Length: 457
Image 1 (cartoon, one colour):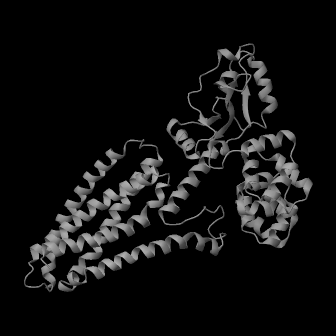
Image 2 (tube, rainbow, N blue to C red; image 1 turned 90 degrees about the vertical axis):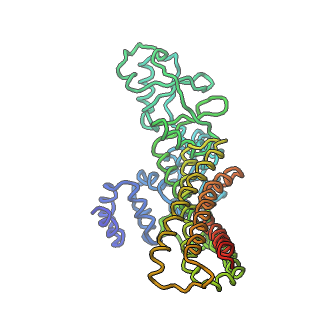
Image 3 (cartoon, rainbow, N blue to C red; image 1 turned 30 degrees about the horizontal axis):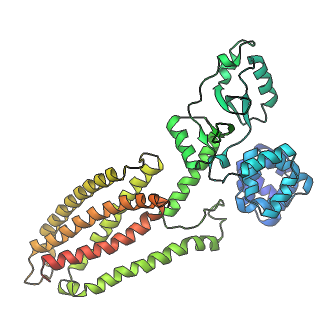
């Protein structure tokens, strides 16, 4: 394979073989190879790679490698690399370097490149403006088809996408769009205004990037125009940007639902330092460990109940786990619905009533099922039960506490993410680990209280 041959060429410091295989590989593969090299091998890579290939490679590297990689080149090479980057990639890269390096790199750009880059850097990386590219095909309605084609022919290499050509007024206010195929099959003297179609969907530059992804998904778009509050066209977001957004957002949600804190790393799992993994995992683990001590306190509080009928210990893990499982299921469904835009403001009551009904159904059926198992199977093992406690009452205590636990846990799993969103927190933060720990405590209280009341302990 070319990848293995290139890696072997780098280790052997074989320049000719390196250049041969580097020409054939995609820049994403080259970036992945570069990330896994040691310092000496990276020096060989940057010293021999063709300069026109490197901008695409640089755009694929993790943010932690950007500055140190650029510093491997001299000033002239840095200027060429930065100039060849797309505006949005250049802005993203410069946001990932130190302030001192950012000023040096900006000074290397041409005035128009610097202006475009600074305009994009005004927006946060996780906004539509931070994701857009300004390399967009724009024309005016007073042009003819021939004039438009002449412009597009001249700008075809610098324009990000020709799938949509946008028609703007003199002040850059977005008027409409024209499809390339309509231009291609129209007479040259046809006025553009006869071909203009209305632009139904735009997004503000300050909107969250996740909103852009939702719009793409809902309306099956190929490009999304980005405008300011005055309706002026600033740029476009393309499908490749959306794929990156979806990957980032899904990774962020998965990590938060797993109790991993901090900003996600762009480096691969193996290349991320152990200390970085430790810093991101420890805070949640420590916090949840402290919270879990409450479970131990509940056990101490009901020590007499457990001592009276030690058989209760057999069912305790089941009751506690059922709550964590159902709460996690509810949280997952609600978080997914919110992330897809299925839950609008004011729908909280509908969600609560829905999950309350569902939780009650699950709880009742699970309670009845466990009661049946207790009555039919438990006697086969000749369990020790105090003479004052009958098996039906014991089964009732277990099944009732299980039903209540599942109902409350399901409701909690739905309410907590919505509550988090209401106070401007990411709903994923309160998912699996937090919910599981909380419902563990609730489950113990419910279980021992039910047993104490029904069994007269």
